[in-house]
Image 1 (cartoon, rainbow, N blue to C red):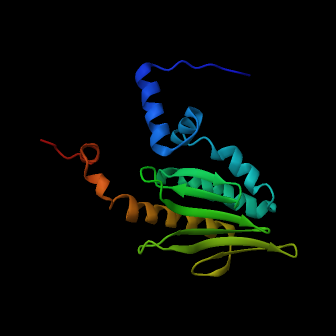
Image 2: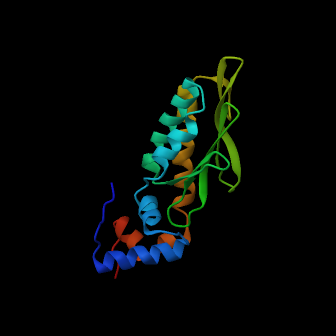
Length: 177
């Protein structure tokens, strides 16, 4: 089904500006990223190769990122879901799938990517792990993923120089002269 959508001139101009600023090929890609639409089908395709328990843990963990305001992106070539900070597009978390396993890595306070959690299926046996403990339940992996997501968001997203702008001051409820 081919659908045409008419945009107001100011909306069209804003989309073209975002397209140029981000180096994207199409207006659809700009809107897909802004609306966080691209990953849903791509995430499903990416995780479909994993055994049921591993797949379920990833789907639930992915759904927990909604309160962190990350922009999700999927890199099919390296089988990785990237969770980017929306303004500077820095990767804050990454979930990589390979050989019947997955690994979640995230930024630590020093700005380095560290292992957070993961799971693997070997010889019909599914095991999960976190950075602190090996052989945990799937719920523990989801919790570790979500907690690291929130901590990374708090640590990095609210300490950036661009947050000193007028819009953020209004958002924080501060009076601007």
